[in-house]
Length: 141
Image 1 (cartoon, rainbow, N blue to C red):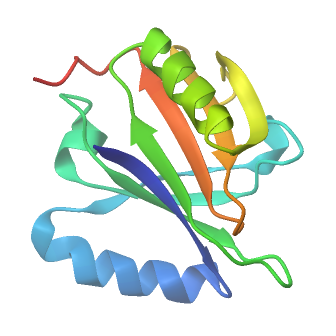
Image 2 (tube, rainbow, N blue to C red):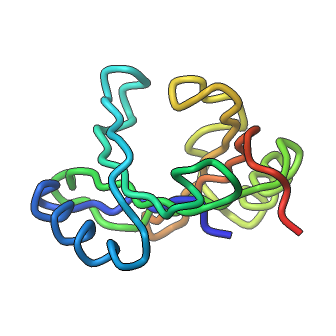
């Protein structure tokens, strides 16, 4: 399941207005922002839009995070929900074995939330995957 996507946009306010209106009939809404000042230097400011399940925290839902595009930036950032920390570790190892580029070893990411465990890899085209286990999400299935 797709947990979250970072969309790199030229104007966050314009993009937020578009996505909020387009997704409103599906129950999606703004649920917060993330300030880069509260985490590592490589994590940008983010504007969050989520589906009802994601926002309520009652299960594994989906979110979109808008971020300002850096000059010359391309590619997609895709968060994949994992059922356990061990699943994050396994996916990360498999991605590296398949030729992925290490962009963050498996570890707790308390700057996002307590119980947020993730690993990051990139592909040869500049796309990025984040394998993430959120302790508050019940396993799927």
